[in-house]
Length: 372
Image (tube, rainbow, N blue to C red):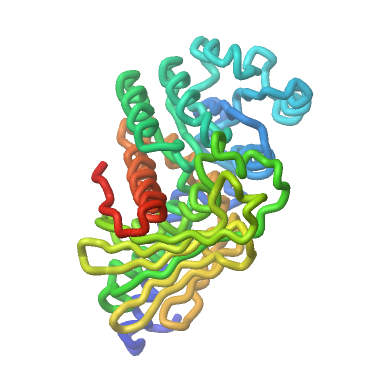
């Protein structure tokens, strides 16, 4: 076994960061393929919306979780009901549509409602789920406005139920190791952050390009990851934002933004330079610049194959199922009666920053970010 005593301080911190994070994540049982515990003790999860994300990511992740199980589905497509029931062994009494959803209140198999719907529907179904007496995990962005976010938080508080937002990246060993490296000054004092996420969007008729459903374009969909990464690494909130938008296809992006760049100022003096786009692939990174080096992830936000480098050296970490990690954490929070670190207030803070970005574009000036 090699000793760390001869390593430069920078390398020692990097090694310590990765080892500590791997140990904590492995102990939590978040890696893919971890044996499940007694199914009878797992919290039941109802998936609301059976689109691509639920089908390809969340439902499979629920088969790997230690603390959760898929116990109900809510869909507006009757053809999916039997297919999902057969595949996942869901009782016919735990299959709902959007009209009879409120009957879920009497379903003892359901503890958590996971909302995986177009953004404009998050507000309605979070409030309905809370009134039905269920804890809520809602996909990001939390809602289409900060006003809706506040109403969702209030509804869950009134029902004495937990509300968490699907910020899966806050549970990966790679992002946690990056955060630990920055906080532990493995790169010296943090000076600046660069972050971006984008891709070339396809079907021009999809809901993500309809403002009424999506609330916005690239920023609401994937730019929020870059925003989250900056807030996650600094540990505080931006105080002002300056943004601009670029649009090359006025027809396809008639209702929503195509590409946006923005600069955020943090109270510590750190600046963050961010970008997002629906018009090209390959933008998938976060870089933290310090006084003595840098740490970066590229790719940073994909479902798998994340890569972390600290001061030019790759940190070897196991890949994991992000959704299984976030679900198990939420179940633990519920059992221990403590708020999730990705609570509704975390979602609200992102929406306040997003609203400042859009206001900056419209007014062509720097905008102060409202406090949550």
